[in-house]
Image 1: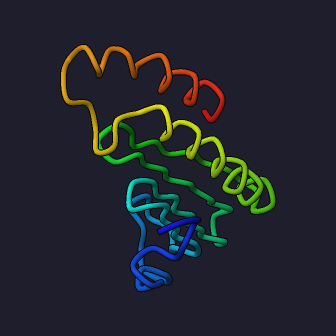
Image 2: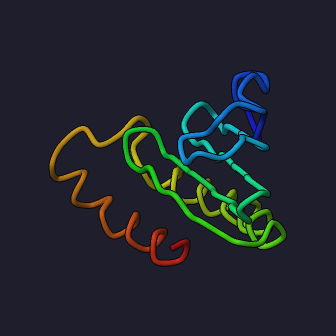
Image 3: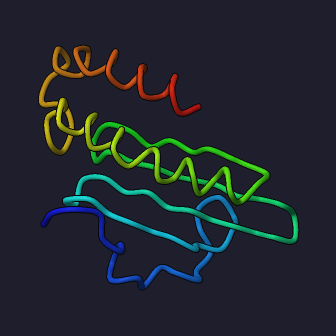
Length: 112
C-alpha cells in the first residue's frame, strides 16, 4: 500500500470521533499512520488525532476549519518522515523506545 487512503474504506465518516466531533476525514498510511479530523460546527470545534502504531497517539484542537485542515495536510509528510525513522509497530526494547523518544518529542513540539 502506498500513499494516504481513506481509513477502513471510509466507513468511519459521519460517525462520532474519539474527541466528540463528527469524523469528516479519516486517512491511513501503510496501515501504520492515521490522521482523523473531527468537526462540530455548533461549537466551533475542530480536532485532529494522529497516531503512529505502537509509538504515538496525539490530539490537536482548533477553532477554525481552515487552520485545522491546513495542519491536517502539513502533518502527513511529517508523520511519514517520523515513521521512516521508527521501527514498524512499536519499539522492540526499552533501549529502542529511548532512541525514539527524541524523534517523538521533536514531532510533538512542532505539532502541539
